[in-house]
Image (cartoon, rainbow, N blue to C red):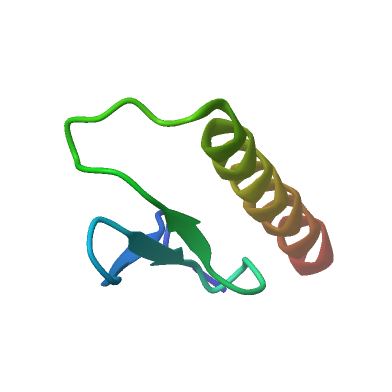
Length: 65
């Protein structure tokens, strides 16, 4: 089963953007303008979300074998 390889952006309020992925439970919200640096906690949240998706992708791959 092929899954999309990237998160999809959903508009949010003001300078917030929401990101979803079929293998990620919930949504990831990032605040700030596109040209702004992310805050350390936001970077941590993004890294954790990517890690979760990669782990689930590995689980699916093992189940398909």
